[in-house]
Image (cartoon, rainbow, N blue to C red; front, top):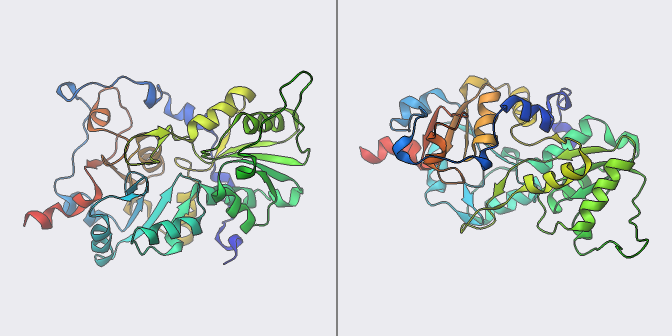
Length: 342
């Protein structure tokens, strides 16, 4: 399938910069807040107790985050397969939108298959795909430039799909710059953009290469797949997310990135325009307040937060939290609480 057939004429105009998100939120980052205990919870977010009346009857399309909603690390959350089957039986459309850029859409299809979930490829959207979509819409290829990647194979594969040349990525995972007397790192002057995605082999070489491109090559753009503070590499604990890698580049360049993943409206605008969806009949389901829930509230969608990922009930209901979903639930299996209790 040609990548270009997926891209809409207005796609690039929908992408917001990280500074726009920060200005829009206008509050202390979630990761730095101190949260109160349940005894002093004040935020008014109803828990899902009557899913048919609260969500199912009012929703035609569900957009699911993946990490913390469908799986944790490489482990499928129990009951998810049956819940997705029940939703399909009700005629609900579903899309799976992840900020994790380590895999391409084809890579995520393989992960779904490996977990026993038969999800069509056209229902999967990753931030690696969004980065390629942004470059194609802004006609980056026509510039004759190439991309320097901090990230993994997902971004590389998506750029290959649209024939945009790139350097870096996994190939720079073991490199070290010459930091001896007079040492310097030479960069390719044809780099026109730096894309920063989650990278388990990020190193000083990559950081230095990226900052030199952004600081010294005129017009070089800084693109981030997402700003997630933490992620689920395993189901045992939280791990530092792409926000840490983006923060390193932002810190040494002073430049705000263009963000293409959630909560940027790029992917929801694409879905609504392509499929003629009614926003008020779409429910965004995720485990993060500052990406998933904000993606829903900022884009006119219903939103539901699940507690199966990074956000605790204490954190959600604290008086300090000002990002509130319409409802929250333990997992998406709670969509069928009514049938279980009857």
